Length: 309
Image (cartoon, rainbow, N blue to C red; front, side):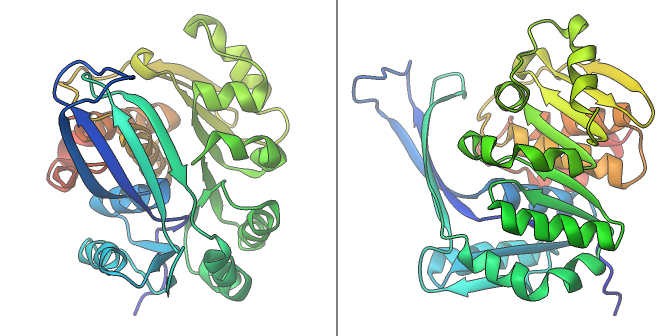
């Protein structure tokens, strides 16, 4: 059996608890609407999207030994994700994300209950070299502590593997700022970018120098999403800068947009496309995701011929 995976994804699983108001959201009042429970977590969403797009994927994570945890595993396995290195634990293996959306499908407020990452750290401590050796590229959740991030990065450098960093929570960015320079590509939003760089992108036309500055210490590529203004990107290897507009769609739920954009962009880079084409793919995948109430859209599987055009 071929043990070589196109990509391995390190990160936590969350259960997303989403509240959708029926009418205009009143932040201080009681809002009639609906509440849903969905499989989530940045890394879980990313690995599922990458599998939808046809990559051979492996997930490094943990789930609870509960109905929900087993359901998460079953769904990933059904989509072809290898879960050999997902720890099944009694409790605290998964996190919870409580989010309230407004009438436009945008996030109004959220609270994240973190899982105990020690269950993933155990896998990294024991099997990191084997996992990295048997893949072509790595997606790394930058919410991990510095010790385990560096362990993964060291193994990736040892085996000459590309690493793509994904940010789950803004409060952990500052303590891990030094590792960005060791990534093949960092994909983040404008809020995260401002925390990392100390600068905010106000004008698309003036953003090239700001992005170039970020790549001077080793980071090869950077993509920054700007919400309704689209995304800007810079590839220091090819010296390519550009901007991509969003694709207009009827928005239902924006919570999975960033994860889908990340997955689509990484797919493009792993498949050998340039940064411009890769960001275009990411934009198309995100547009499909925000048109439904789930954090990922299985219709991606049937629309790859449109996505990669």
